[in-house]
Each structure stands twice: as structure tokens, then as C-alpha cells.
Image 1 (cartoon, rainbow over the protein chains, first blue to last red):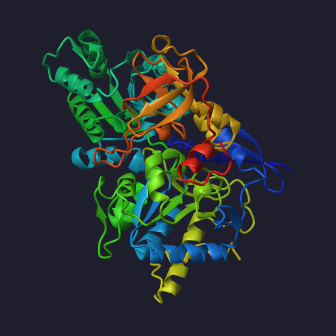
Image 2 (cartoon, rainbow over the protein chains, first blue to last red; image 1 turned 120 degrees about the vertical axis):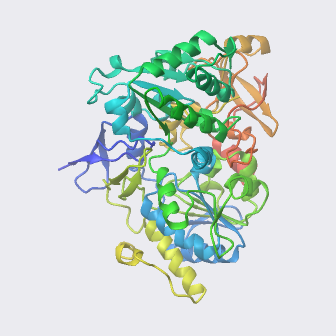
Length: 456
Length: 129
């Protein structure tokens, strides 16, 4: 009898929808139906049924082909490669649970590695701005219940976070927003007429890369000063109209995305967005939030800040203390300067999502991929180690884009013999300790860890 | 040029990056129709996109989400990242959006698969040309 599992978390985008229902086969090994998810979440759960999913690590042979090896051999190779490297880079964690992120901290410290996550090529500049200027943010529940003016700046949730608008930001009826969309003023700032811009009451089709000027114009107007007739390709009257809409609102919510952090200005765009939020609070209530891309990409920021004091770009190669300086210790910069001599790609696909020049640089040295599925990175790796899919056949804690932790559950029984990220990293850590004749330091982790209960 | 996410890319990616849907979703360049006319590009024909760090063959289409003249969009993914400059302005983030490119007609050039582009870049491609 198929079983309907309710209140399942979706391991795709930063919205981390936790109202998914999944119908699984009676043996608990196949996803039959997925309810409530967007098309991407639907595909993600069904992809777990793929009969070609790798069940054993694969190592590249001298002739370029890949050959299956045992987990013991793979763990041994990874431990030895990490120990032999002077400055390994461990990057990824877009699709991993917090338990795995915590476990990799021990491996990275032992290896003297640089530990970095996808924020490095995504919302990294937002972190820089938040360090400089603070983060007057709130939870998505508050957005749903209070926000009557929502600004989407450089983000397109209709494509990147498909259920964000219906769960939190445009359509839902909340405690103080009982008329839903009718009660909200939606402002979109995007150089394209994106599908989110089509939903907006006001769309600022600014000149690409001129976000800073437009933010500055809004601040100038809100402080009661005059602005030029046109700023960033937007007419003065339109800017005044938007500023007035924000001032009149009871609660303004600014969501910003890659349109701010991937383009010229980077952290300065986010910096002035935070300043704009602060200025708005002299007129009404206002809050701001980064549109984080992956379901648990806020996780490494939380876990590693607790472990090392920094959210990303953490250089542990000094051995005595953690050091963070994006531009110096960020993955793509390290790769381009050839400063790393081993690359471990975990739960992401650097092969597809890094600029190809940076991929060529890291490929000069041992390249290990830890990922449940075949991807571009796994196909250029020297070693590919499959793990269970966090959120599908492995549960765990994830942090939603508003830094709210959610316990995700496993809906499928994992593939036999395939470990979770946490179990794999614990195995690698133990192997590294054995090789260096040192005692593992588990602290509290030992009592909570599951390994080796699952993997024989 | 900007390279950003689309739902077609996300949905196809979750089926697997060697899936034909991913190829269809990402090996395209959305251009303003006026720009296409000026450059002598017919819609749904192949073009060569060249940036400061490389070039890639993609299929030019009229935008699914309107782009103004002078701006083009390749969905994030393997094809886009062949031309994304790795310069980071000391923040760690490459220039995924807002970099200059030249787009020229290349109707007789062949679109490469994701695997061919990535494995080819690191000398592992064994599939021939």
C-alpha cells in the first residue's frame, strides 16, 4: 500500500517549502507522486527514482575511464589526498544538510583546507555588506502577515523561487494582509521584463548595472532632496511615485537577489539597499532579505559561523586560527591564482556553475566530487563519491532563506550501502586521524553521530 | 550580457545535466529582436557569443522575458559559463552579469553538448568533434 508522507520539506530553492506531500511505494524505495511542489521540486523528487543513480564511488583510470571502487578505497584516497595537499579547497554545500556541514568542519580543520560554500559565487557580497551595515531582516512569516509593499530588486522569484510569491510575498492572505495581492503594492526592479516584473504594480526597467544610482536616488528622495530628471534610465516622476508608495505603506519588504550581487557594484549595491531600509524606517516599518538560492545555503553560514566564526571563505590552512578575506580566500579567486592543490566539490556542480576558466585551473590538481548524482563536476573528477540525497532519502536540519531552521525528513529508504554526507565525512575524518596517528576530536558530535550504524 | 536563472533551467537541471531538456533550456541566447535584425541574425539560428575570456555557440531566440536593445541573456549553466569572466572585484563572485560580449551569426556552427563543453575544456572529451 503506497504511503502518503505529509509536511515534507523541498530540497531545492531558498523558500524551503515544508508543505510538500509525497506518495511513496509500499517498499519505500520509489516516489510515486509529489503534491504541492513546483515543477522543479517535482522533478527533484522524481529524479531520486533514477535507476542509473550511482551506488559506488568511481575512480578515474589512467586511460580516462571511470571504474567503480569500494567506499573504503574512496575514503582512503580522499583522506590521503587531503593530507598530501598543502592547501586543499572544499567547496559547495548548496544541497547538503547542516549535519554534513558540521562534519566537514572537522575534515577541513584536519586537512588545513579552505572551506567555502556556494554563497561565495552567489550572496557572498551580501555577507560583506551585512558585516559593514547590519541586517534589519525578519522572517518570511512576518512578510506574509504584515508586508503591504514588496520590492523585488534584482530577483525573479517566479523563476528562481517559484512558490515564494504564493507562500510568502505576493498572493497569500496574512493576519494584517487579509486581502492578499489586492492589498499589496508590488515593485520590481529588473533590466528585463521578467515574469515577476509582469506581476508588479511598478516596474523599474533600469539600465543594467546601475542599481547603486537608483538606490541612491530613492534615498535622496526619502530624505527630502531633489534628484536629476533621469537616474539609471528611470524618469524622476517614476522614482517619486515608488518612494511615495514605500512611504505610505505600513510595512515595506525589500527582497534582493543576484541582480545586485552578480553585477558591477556587488556588495555596495547591497550595502545601499540596507541603508535604504534604514531610511525607510524613519517613515514606516521596513525590512530586507536576501533571496538565498538553495534550500539550505543559509545553513553553512549558521553552522560554520558557530564553528569557526565566519560564514564562508574560511581559510584553515594556517593551522592556528581561521582566516576569512573574500577576494583572497574565496574559491574562484584561489582557483584563478592557482593557490589550491586539491579540490573537493560537495553537493554542488562547480563544473557547470563556475566560469570555465576557473574550472580549468582547479582541474590541474586532484579533483574529488561528493554528490548523489552524475553532474558536470563528477564527469571531470578523479574520484566521484555518491551519497544519499539530503531532503529525499536523508533527513536533517536546514536553514531557510530567513535563517529559520526546519527539520527535513527522509521520504525514501536510502540506497543500500550509500552513506549520507555526514557519515562519509566522519569516515574520512577517522581515516585521516588513523593516517596521522592522532586521536579524533569529536566534542559533542560523537554522541549524536549515526555512522557507522548504516554503512557496514 | 547577463546570465541568470530560469525555471526551465531549474526544472531540467533536476532531471540531470545530460538530459536533453537541459540542453534545450540552456543552450540559448535571448536577444532583443531589433538587435537580431541589426546583426543579421535569424531567430532560432546559431550564433557565436564571444567575451573577454572565450566564446560559445548558442541558439539565438527572441526573448521569453523581454530584454531591451543592447542586452542579451543566456540562462545560467554550462553554456553561459563558457563566456563568464572569472574576475570578482575582490568579492569572490565572478562577473555573471553585466559583461560585454560580441554576438555574431554562426548558422553553420554546431551546438556542443554540456559534457562536450566541460570535458573538452579540461582535455577529457573522447566523443570526437
